[in-house]
Length: 527
Image (cartoon, rainbow, N blue to C red; front, side, top):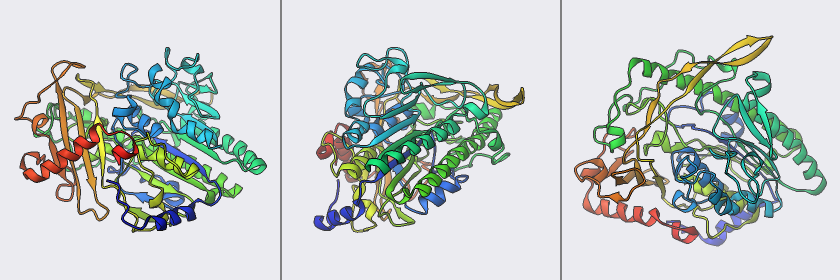
């Protein structure tokens, strides 16, 4: 529940002090970036320019730990059960025609356009963007530009570092395997700086604010660092957490059926760890370049800069070599930093900020209003530094499994000098890692109080006999039936499922809140 115990007129006064002239907004959204496994350790610009100069939310949460549903929540301010993109497939709602014709028409960009912002989206959007048969309004595939964006530089399909196609304002722009010309993170950096040049001209001429959203491929598979960062953390191993390569026999079916990693899978998981860190160094270079531009043009202190990831990632936890899709903190917790006008330097808050809250906050910054149909809440009042402003103490986590055993693989690359040019060179594949399976559909309530005295999660499962079929009762002698519960103040790494030991009253409170959130709708229903 959204608590506003502090006198409302003082809260609004603090917010008004933040507003001032209409500010710019920049969002940098990375792909598959964890916070628990130290993914930001080679990102000094992020730490210096954003975290130290602004606010760190220690418990940023992905409402759904997989790409397309999570991104759909970020774009629309809606939970998965309301925006309808339940998985990464077109039949599952990811960038489908129906989604584009309905939910996307009320996305954040549409409202920012109405608010007068000059805008750019660049990089990964939704996993099936640009596919044949997608789009609406007479435009399909690459030619389709989602509504609200002034300029569009969207990646076709899923994250890639090389050999990809960009929709450059609706026109296909194909890229190859040359580092200098094609490495996607650097291409996005150059496009961002180009946009900022144009945006500054408009700002100077008319005062028009700008809104820029960059979706990087890092740190998604195939984990391809730029050549100068190829040996980042070379020889290091992924963090050996207490659940590393331990099989969760007390977990739901998908997890308890995992087999321990083989020595080769361990080696590849460790390789993914270091290579992911390398990919994020190019993101950090981009942040540095953006801030160099903002400081040179005098816009740094009138720009909200939000940095987060679509969801987290695991690397060997519970025997799963690499991926996401699970309910554990490695997969649902993300980096979350924000710098902007009126935000005290170095502030830290523990409130459970989740991805449905991003769009409401950005439109609140721009207009002072949030659409009633959106599920998320604006956390703008939290940015004033007033510790008496409070926030709801839980968030909904949900995942709609595809109901069948699935493994997720990755290619690997190295660099070769060809005609005096560095090119990306395919060098083999990783062993596919388990990532989805039977009865991996769950709904959770994740609770965190500002003082961290409450820091737990409870999850309930939905079971099926056949993928996509009618739900059936879950077996009561297994975790699908009695659920999963972890108190992170006692068991930070979620080593033991204690759902069976929950006192009846505590289970009742958690179950009732979970049911409230499971089908909630809008500001009033989900607050």
